[in-house]
Structures are given as C-alpha cells and as structure tokens.
Length: 275
Ligand code: NAD
Image (cartoon, rainbow, N blue to C red; front, top):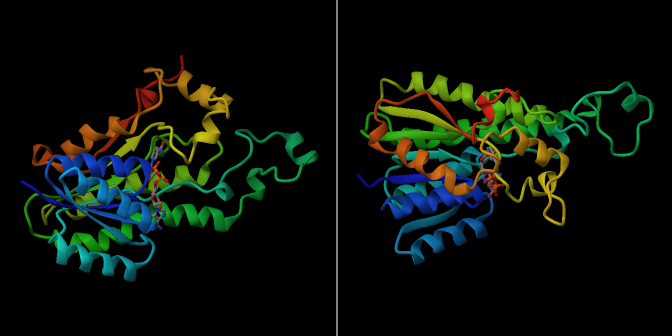
C-alpha cells in the first residue's frame, strides 16, 4: 500500500537517503527540515526522478511550526501514515575535550580545553531537546492522523551510543538513550490504536557533522576514527544506503507484528567486546 510519509531532518545526509528510497517505492514524502532550502532540494530531486514529494519548513522544537507543516501535508499529500523522526544531532557544548578525566587536566588548563566540570548546561539542554523533545513533539502532532487507522507506524532514529555511551559525548549519548527508551514506551502506549513504533540505532556513518572528528584533512583517519574502525568487526564506516532495507521493512506491513524494537545497524560494533 502506498503511504504518506513525513520525515523530519530529511534535508540531512541520512534521512534524505531514506526519503529518496521510500519515494522510489511509490510513497508520497513530506520532506521536513529547519533548512527550507535543503528540504526543497531533496523534494525536487525526488520529483525529478518521478516520485512525489514536498519540501516543508518545520522546527521539531516548535509545536506551531509542526502544526503548520501538518496542515500543508494533509492538504497536499493527505493524512500522515508514517512518521520518521530523523532530526537530531550533537553540540560541542555538550562534549568534553578528553575521553578520560586526568588530574593534570585540572592543574594545567589551557584555553578552550573542556573537562566534565566545564560542560555548559545550555549545551546539554540543546542536545536533549533536539533529540528527545524533537522526537516527542512531531509524534504528538502527526500521530493524531494515525490513531485507529491500519498500517501506520513511527520510526525513531536512536544511535549506537544509546546502548553503551561513547566517551566525550554525555549529552548526545543520554539523549539517544532517552529516544530508545521512549520508543519502547510509545510502542506499548500506542499498541491498542494500531500504531507501531520502532527505531534504528545507526553505528558510525561518515557525515559532514563528524567528518573532522573522524578524518584528517588528507582523508586519513584520526585517532578516534581509527578506534572506531578497530572496534567495528566489519571494518568500515556505515554508508547511508546501509539504512535503507531496515527502514523499508519497518515502514512496511511485512513488519506488522514488530513494535518496540531498536535495531542496531553498526557492522557488529555493539556485539563486539574488543577482545
Ligand atoms: P544531518 O546533520 O546531516 O541531518 C540533520 C538534519 O536535521 C539537518 O538537515 C538539519 O537542518 C535538521 N535539523 C536540525 N535541527 C532541526 C530542527 N530543530 N527541526 C527540524 N530539522 C532540524 O545528520 P545525519 O547524520 O543525517 O543524522 C540524522 C539522524 O541520525 C540524527 O538523529 C542523528 O542523531 C542520527 N544518527 C547519525 C549518525 C551518524 O553517524 N551520522 C549515527 C547515529 C545516529
């Protein structure tokens, strides 16, 4: 069955790939993003390939903005059948400079060096809001279309670090753990009204956001980049296309009895103890 699919953050690297893949299957796609220009670009690429999409400006942190977006979706594409909560990310203010606190870090502090004690609550809040509230609010708005109808579902985007936190990024790790937990909570809460709720937990995908953390200007891997590859049994970063088949499955009636799962797509990272 062809569906109307709303994807937040769909102007970004991973979700634009999912938007295009779902459009190729004949679904109508609402490409929502804080950046209207990229949303319209993705929508026009889909339309040029013979699909059906519209780009819409929407801030996942503002109810009014989401309500406006919903009105446009309903008018042009019909009721929302599937919501993919893709908007998310990290912020440098919620990140420590070093993986481990050392006594010397406190004694010889250099300008710009950030220990746990320097973390700015506003940075932590930004990350929690973007990832968690930015998943909850769009769900409050768009899931209203789904209640009591057949074949509706929600797909959240969690992360590898929701299972075991990565060093240096406590805010992002905690926020994604909240997204995974919320996925299970919502799956139970919506179980009587026909809405399935699942999540992807992508491992490490080389994107613009993390490129400078993981690669040097000459393309070689940074120390952290190499650590990730060493800890990934399949020995490579993920490619956005690696997320497609699981997304198609979770958005399709083929997974009609699957709800409340968080599926790692990580080349074995989460399964590997490192020994
Ligand atoms: P990206 O930065 O390429 O895309 C994110 C998009 O969200 C951008 O287009 C941005 O404009 C939009 N956005 C930001 N704030 C918004 C807001 N308030 N309202 C609406 N849109 C907003 O990121 P990506 O790498 O494609 O990541 C997509 C999702 O996957 C995120 O939730 C991210 O946390 C998650 N994820 C990414 C990776 C990775 O390795 N890239 C790994 C695990 C999980």
